[in-house]
Image 1 (cartoon, helix red, strand yellow):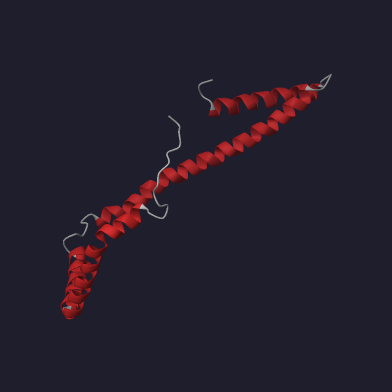
Image 2 (cartoon, helix red, strand yellow):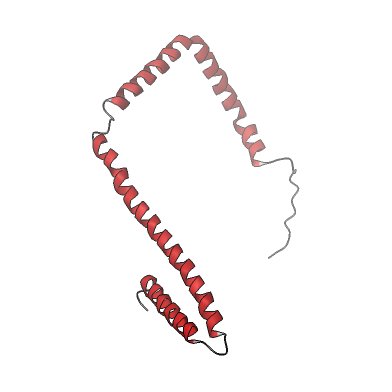
Length: 142
């Protein structure tokens, strides 16, 4: 099943060379015919291109014009509001996360002490309460 197939094919023969060999004369005739036709009717071809460009410009500013140009100008304002709201929410979340990391360091350092003073106990309690508030604010399911 996995045996190598050996053939007597010339490695220089590819699909492209075979296609060129088969259809080359047809493409050569088409090339010479189109070149001769373009040389014989060059003014006609030029003016047809100019007319097509002018017609395209006229149609794009008349028939294919979008009638609702005025409402489009108001849409970016509506789109930007959620973006700015999302950005402000991301900034708030970043600030809260920074505060939570600071509180976690303080809680870890206070809980690592052997004996807490009254001031340490109050600070630890306030830090835990604030940590819980921030956690509930950004994780309402818990």
